[in-house]
Length: 124
Image (cartoon, rainbow, N blue to C red; front, side, top):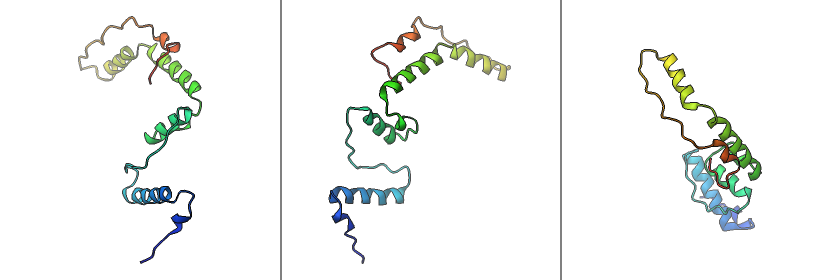
């Protein structure tokens, strides 16, 4: 039996050992493995990167400027929902499937979508 004690030389040996054991488990179970390592998070944009990494979000993990990300998300939301998305989708489906009767989409509400550009709260 080979006993490896290289982990005892790390700055924080018990944390390093835990990370090694977690890596071993990942190699055995693959990408679907759920880690049980505690991850500290701060209140800056770095916290968003941690959340994105945990969700395997390839875009958000690179977003280190939360203010820029916030502005871009709002602008994209405004751009998408300023268009008649449901009506366009319905027309595409009616052309693709002329023999099927599809109901009209619900009436559009009176929300001014551009309000998300300056609203103090926004979730994407």
